[in-house]
Length: 53
Image (cartoon, rainbow, N blue to C red; front, side):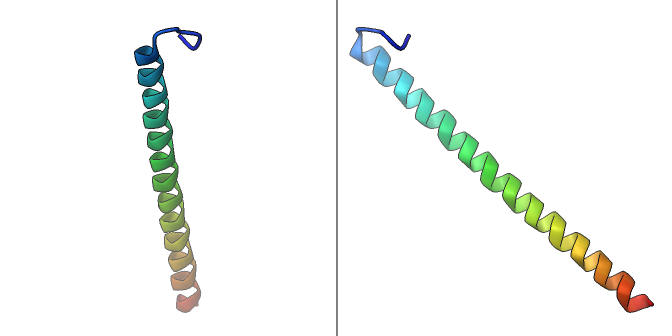
């Protein structure tokens, strides 16, 4: 499809690529947020264990 002479098709393909990239970026942001929350939860658990001693 890349070498298509039809400008409409090319436009659709580039639009689709942008949509996919945006979704991947969103997923990466969510994953990063999830990892940060998981790390902070782990940190809290470690601290609570430490306080008990």
